[in-house]
Image (tube, rainbow, N blue to C red; front, side):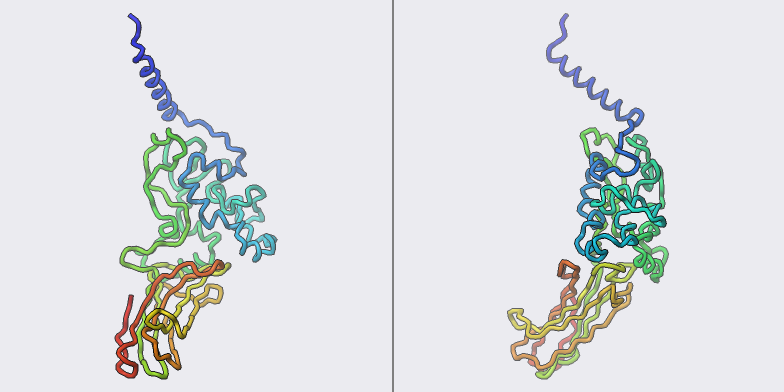
Length: 340
């Protein structure tokens, strides 16, 4: 009896599936990486696609190519800076070794994950890795980040935070996410999902109900001659100062203005918090900003206070905003304190 023509394709497909599963679940095949050191991150991205996409949009990926770094280091001549902006590996930071290949990748995959001839992870995610993986829990500790982010790490370690409440650098800047660590081909669906870390290394989104930085304002006096008020800014979340960092330009600014009914400002006052000037917001220590406006215009309706984040590129975001009406008519009792 001849086999049914319909059964032959089905049997063939089933055999292919079985062979594929056997291949995935058998001994790990050795991926031929270009060399123990010097593998482009795009090669890692062929399997770790989601992680690679997060990294390539991050500040780490731009650590060498960013224009302000180019200028500040005199066209990349400052060796001390290069050790952290294009490191071969973070276990070599105390040496004079800097990367000569793939420099445009800045802090790349190998910078954090290469140790000798193996790649390290905080734990083994699978028994079927395609290359040698060594478990290294220390990669998930703040001390690891502190090798380069020294000033921020020092502030973090000295912050008055109860041990039970202390969060690591990774807790905030590499939040946990549950997914497959590999996602570059259809066969990767056979890998189980696990808790791993986001690789964007970016700004920390506010937690529900708690702003990262709190802004409040109150008015003490309103007369035709002057408006006297006070703003208060508090770093509520970061266990280090805000802004932070030794180099570059990071700024938080309290921008206060008297505005008319259309929102047009007739007077403005700006108070800046800049990391490099050490005018910063320590953790949970409110900073008072005195405000005084004289010769107040007749059409002024309100005091608006904004907390603005800026960088080399200019204003990045308005983080918080407070508006206090200055009516009833000036000369009467000052309005009550108003918060967002």
